[in-house]
Image (cartoon, rainbow, N blue to C red; front, side):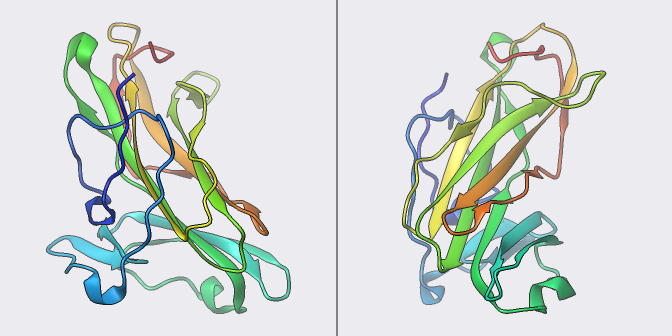
Length: 205
């Protein structure tokens, strides 16, 4: 298992070799808008994060009437009409990067990043992630769910990895995530936009 570390919020969606595998949770404050760097070609700013344009963003929460809502949209595009139906008492926005495959043979691993921004009336938040792999009966967990500790911060950004069980059979792999905020509950499961076909077996070594 590789040691994990926090990524800066400007690194969302960028690969950084040598990262990841969960150790402790990490939460950092989202930067003020005046300090947010320019996105750059191919990137847009979403909730103070630098995100690859076209990446799926999930939003969920509770309206002032107590009704739960959730929807997805692509970074750089207009939010759906559902986002404007009623004012939100609390809202969370979740992001999971594309998964990358680094190294080779027995020293290969998957790498991805997750983040969540919450605002409004919530007490604390956390998130969980898991690598899924294909099977004849549908997706299965490649390892157990991993998660951050709860934090009262409005922003969580964390990198993860999963080692490849080289030679254990070829399957399709992709990570998923889901967020939690007290006062709202768990949001829907969101997956990476890409998936990788690799010979990493049925279970993480």
